[in-house]
Amino acid sequence: MRIGVVGLGYVGLPLAVAFCEAGQEVVGVDTDPRVVEALARGESHVEDVPADALRAVAERFEASTRYAELAKVDAVVVAVPTPLTRNREPDLGPLVAAATALAGVLQKGQLVVLESTTYPGTTRERFVPLLEESLLAAGKDFFAAFSPERTDPGRTDFTLRTTPKIVGGLSDECLRRAVELYELVCDDVVAVSTPEAAELSKLLENVFRSVNIALVNELAILCDRMGIDIWEVVEAAATKPYGFMSFKPGPGMGGHCLPVDPFYLAWRAREFDTQTEFIELAGEVNQRMPYFCAEKIARALNDHAKPVRGSHVAIVGVSYKPGVGDLRESPALKIMRLLREQGAEVTYYDAYVPQLTELGLRSEWPEEADCTVIVTAHPDLDVERIVRESALVVDFRGVTRGIEAPNLVRL
Ligand SMILES: NC(=O)c1ccc[n+]([C@@H]2O[C@H](COP(=O)([O-])OP(=O)(O)OC[C@H]3O[C@@H](n4cnc5c(N)ncnc54)[C@H](O)[C@@H]3O)[C@@H](O)[C@H]2O)c1
Image 1 (tube, rainbow, N blue to C red):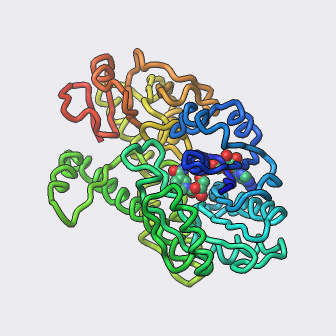
Image 2 (tube, helix red, strand yellow):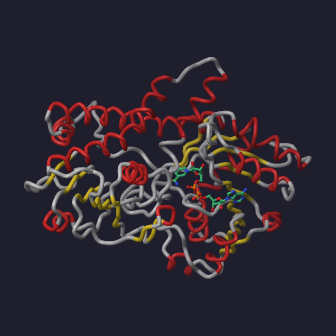
Image 3 (tube, rainbow, N blue to C red):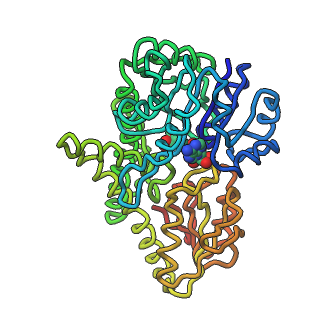
């Protein structure tokens, strides 16, 4: 098969490479010329796709900024961003732009699958009508489906192949073709009855995480007041072999998905006279965490007879999660801004993020800081060295558990 992938980011690029590895020819289209040029040089901007993997499939993979290249493929998968507007409403700009451009080159018999996370109804009501501006009819001349992406950047225990893939088609034939496509790269393809069910299943997965993280974060704040170790509590509860799932507290949610996706659902629900209060409350609790963390750092400094103003605070780990350099919605950035506003001199260390242009900083090992704060603990982080060499350590990830030291404060 010849397959097109629109949007070569965290989702699109690994998928494109997986199709190539399964022996298919892939044309990737991205509107960002820097992405396309780097890929043409064999350089990958996505941690989960090593340059070696890209080079190994170079003969079957072509990246371009031109949608016209997609006229020659059998199926197109769309994985463009679905962010929020400044008012925290769904921003379907990239999705609309992609569908409009695709309509200009759409061919009879092609299958188009949307993978971008979005509210139920997007595929049928927004995406497909734009494709039909090609004057081809969905379900008859071309085929359309929705299949949510389950990429978890940095994860190695489950891969695209071993993670079941959900697919909902606009018609039985659309579904059949989409299942056939994904069976090339996934061991288990799960068919659902409609694109809406597929769209909502993805949101349920993310809302589930958001709500549970909020719950444990709220408990962490309570534990802070009560002088109880939240990590011990979660670990103890997790010994129950059924009916409990362990979620860890932390400095707040980051990334492209968890802080964003629940708003897509809440927005859509309002159209149906329904308030998703539970979901919105979880978002609020999680958004409050960086403020709580900044306050906890101030308290820790105070206990060492130091004010925030003029103190050197070194942040360790600024990406939103371990093992990746992704800064989107990262709570570390929020904490750094809050500390700067209070007059702290803030530096950072992150092996995955060499520089933070917006803050005018470069990564440097935390030396001679008044307080070193572990916000994201990458897998190779030498936690013991940090505790040994720092005057004061605040740990928001629980990675110092097991270390006893007078200069250590944990969430
Ligand atoms: N990153 C994740 O972990 C993850 C996981 C599951 C689902 N998703 C969802 O997948 C979608 C894509 O996310 P991502 O993380 O890969 O985003 P990304 O920002 O890493 O990549 C998107 C790419 O699309 C390109 N693009 C933007 N508009 C375009 C257009 N009109 N035509 C062609 N290319 C265009 C951008 O230049 C970028 O390279 C989102 O809906 C996201 O919510 C992401």
